[in-house]
Amino acid sequence: MPDAPDKQAANPLQPRGRCPICGRPPSEETRPFCSPRCRDVDLNRWLTGSYVIPGRDDDVEDPE
Image (cartoon, rainbow, N blue to C red; front, side):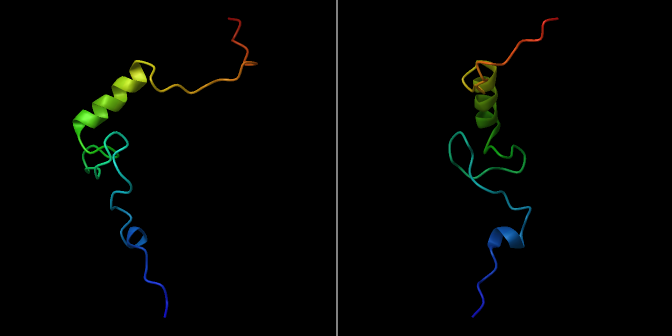
C-alpha cells in the first residue's frame, strides 16, 4: 500500500510551523507570527539587541 501524501505537500499555502514567540499557529496576516503582538515582540528583541548574530574575532573593520 503506498504512503499517504503529506498534508503540507498537498497544500503549500497552508501555514507551516508555529509562532516563534508563543507557539500558536500563525495567521495569514502576520505570518510567521500568530498576532501583531508577537510580531512586535520579535521586532523589539531585534531592536534592543536580544538577538545577536556573532561575528568572528578576526573580522577586520573597514578602514574608511
